[in-house]
Length: 332
Image 1 (tube, rainbow, N blue to C red):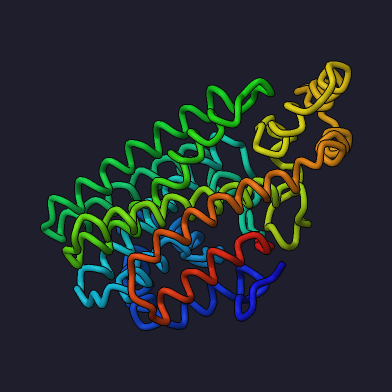
Image 2 (cartoon, rainbow, N blue to C red):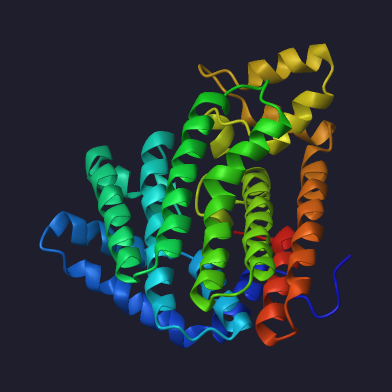
C-alpha cells in the first residue's frame, strides 16, 4: 500500500532529494568535469562518455543529503562526493568487462566502444583519482572508511565471479555478495558524512547501517528489474542476468521452492549453450519469486527506517525516507 506523501517512483524521489543538494551536486560535477582534460586523450574520452551516460549519482546524493541532515557544511564533502562517484564508476567499468556487457543506462558501454583493456585501465585511473581526492582531505578516518570499502567491493566482485553462476547458491551467500559489492559503498557514503561532521558513535553507526540496508534494498530491486523492466526503462536488455549466467535472488527463490523435476527444467533453461530466458522466467512466476524478493527488500526497508530515528526531523531526513520507501516502485 502506498504511503501518504511518499512519491510513487524512485526516480521522482531521487529528483526531490537532488533538489535539496543541487548546489553541492553542481560543484561535484564541476570537479568531475575537470578530469575530462586529461593529457591522455583516451582517458578523457571515456570519462566524457561516463559523464554523458546519464549516471544517477545516487551515492554522492545520499552523502550530501546525510551531510544536510547533520548540518554539515564542511567543504570537503564535495571532494568526498566526487571520490565516491569515481569509485562507483570504476567498478562499473570493471563490471562491464567481467560481465561482457554492451549496454548500460541505454548507451553502449565503454568496453564495447574502446575495448576491455582501455576500460580496465581507465577504471584503475578513476580508483587512483578517487584516492588522491580522499588523501587531500587530510582525514585518516575518511581514508580508512573508503579504502576498506574498496577492498570489500573487490572481495564481493570476486565472490560473485565464483558463486553467482550456480543455482545452488544460498540466499545467505547472495546477501553476503551484494553486501560487499553494492551495500558497502552506500554504507561508506553515509558514514563519510558522519566522519566529516565528527558525530558521536551512535549517529555514525546509524548512518553506516542506514546506508548499508538501503544498499541491500537497492540491489535486490535492481536484480528484480532484470526480469520486470523493459529495455527502455532499464537501459540494458532484460533477462541480461539469465543470458550472462548470473543467478540472483528471484532465481534463487524459484529454485528453492521448485520440485526436483522443475529444478531439472530450470537448470536446462539456464544452459550456457542455449539459455531460454522465457522458460526460466516461467519458473520464477510459478514460485512467486518476484513478490517474495520484494517482501525481503521490504524487511530491509523496515530496518533502515529505524536507523534514521536517531536524527531530528528535517527535509533531508524526510526525502531520504521517501527515497527508501519508493525503492519498491523503482523503474530504473
